[in-house]
Image 1 (cartoon, rainbow, N blue to C red):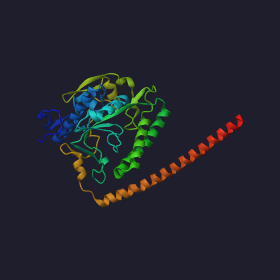
Image 2: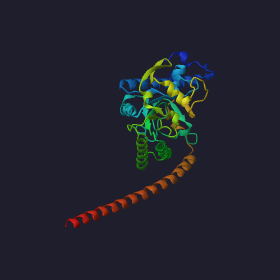
Image 3: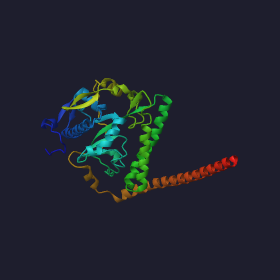
Image 4: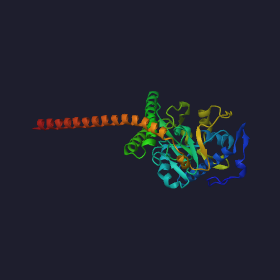
Amino acid sequence: MQKLPIKISLDDSFFEPEELCGHYVTRQSKQHWAVILDLMVEFDRVCKEHGITYFLDSGTLLGAVRHNGFIPWDDDADMIMSRSEYEKLCAIAPTAFKEPYFWQTNETDPGSLRRHGQLRNSLTSCILKAETRNGKANYRFNQGIFLDVFILDEVPDDAEELARFRKELRQQLRLLFELKDWYRIYHGEPWIEKIQKIAYDKFEATVSRYNGTGQKRIANISLLPETKEKEFFIKSLYDDCVDYTFEGFSFSGPKEYDALLSGQYGDWHQFVKGTGWHDVLIMDCYRPYTEYFEEPTNPAEEESTIAFFEKKTAKLKKQKRFYKKWTITLAVVSAIAVIALICSLCTSLL
């Protein structure tokens, strides 16, 4: 068997196809699991070396508790941490993770516009259908097999305020999705570089607005503004962490796993066979994602795509010119008003 680009050692028996809980796990799935498991081990190493607290999350926590490893039909792994721990991780990650590992955020990989972190293996490929156009890997950010690292933020206790908060996040999220395509076409253009950074920074500021304001609950709302309230958890559930065995390795998870899993899955003891959440177009544990960028494209398709986005861009530039003129006019009016006020004060003093 060809050697996988991973550091951990796994027995050959790990890769044997088998039926688990009524689901047939192929050799290819086991190879994918091995790459993800290697990412988990590397992530755990860096976090422990730098005193950063993280927790197994969602299906990965469920897998650890119920299966001591992957849920047989799962295709990814999830970690989660508080916003403050996430910021600590982002500060050290670019130098702490060495090749082939790559810490992906919009800061380290502009244009990816992720709302959370992903640890990638750059010698592999995991290209999602949602991130392709015309069946081709046209986005140029890192698309290696990944480990998701989600963020816990405080959410408003007040119902009306929460509704406004969700609406604001939805609006900003729509813009981020649009900008992802614009960035693909106009990568390197100063105006798109600036706009996508402004939009991303604004989203980050909005989603973390309530941190430290004494709200009672936290949630992974940066991923999905429509997160159900049953998945809003009181902060104390993440006060303590314990070690869980996952495919023979040890990882940190929340001590109060039952309340968390019940909120997410209801009766989590019952097996609900499903499919992986991600809709993958290209999965390759042996070839780097960059090789798929070299696939030939249809010039006519690319030309029509550019034309489509140039229309949108022209509209955006028109709006920018309008707001620029409006800002200048407002500044001039404000200056005149200030001068008039100063003259009025001087006259009254005389």
